[in-house]
Length: 342
Image (cartoon, rainbow, N blue to C red; front, side):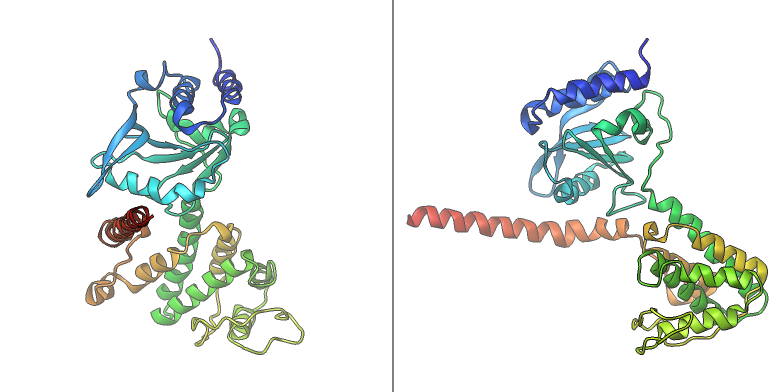
C-alpha cells in the first residue's frame, strides 16, 4: 500500500498536467487531493462540490464544502489569492450551523490555509504544491482520521505564549504591592518594545539585550526606564545605549514610571522577548488590557475585549455587504444606460 508521501507525490505529478483552469479542472483537482490523503475521492469522504451558499439577496457557490472540517475555494493558476480572501470569509460566515474549521484558498500551485476562529487576516500557513511531500502535515485535517495540523504561521500560539509571560509579570508586580495602573502601563510599554525590536522599529535586539544585562545585575529601573523615556523623546540620543531609538508619539510612553523587577520577573520578560513578535497578533493589547483590569473593574466599566472575527460577523452583513450590493446595482444601471444611449 502506498505511503502518504507517495500518494501526495502522485497527486503532484497529476496536478502538473493540469492547465489550472478554474471552471474546467478545479473539481478533478479537489477529487485527486482527497485521494492523496487516503479517501476514495471527495464524494466518498462526504464532501460537496458547488455547495449553494445563500446570502441576503443572492446565492453563491462554494467550490467544495466538507463539514465540519473544510471550505475550499479554487482559483485559476497564477491568480493572486489575497484578492479572494474577503469572499472566502463571507462564504464561511454564512455556513451555519457547523461552520468548517478551516478554509483553503488554492490556485493549483499554492494552498493558503485559514482558521478564521483564531487568526482573521493572515493565513495560518501557506504551502506550495511542490512542498507538500514534506509539508503535508499542515493539511493533517484532510486525513480520514483527523490529525492536528502543524502550521508555520500560527500567530495564535505565539500570541498565547507571549501574553501568558507578560501577564505573569503584571500579576507578580501587583501581588507584591505595585500600583495596578502603573503595572499595567509598564507591561504594555514592554509589549510595545518587544514588538518594536522584531518589527525593526527599535534597534535589533535592544530590549532583549537590556533585559540580559538586568539578569546579570543591572537595574531595570535604570535601563528599561531610560529606554521608555527615550522612546518618548522627539530628540534622538546622540550616543550611548539608546542611540537610534525612534520617537514613539502614540501616548503610551507619555507617562514613564520605572519599576525594579525581581529575577523571576526578568526571566519571564526574557522568555516573552524570545518569541517572534512580528507574528504576535495586535489583539494581545486588548487581551492584556482586559485581564489587567480585574473582574470587578471590568464589570463596573463594562470593559470587554471583542475579537476581530466577532466584529466582522456584525460589520459584514450590516455595513459591508449592503454597500457592495448598492455599488454593484449602480454599476449595472450605469452600464445599462451606456448600452442604451449607444
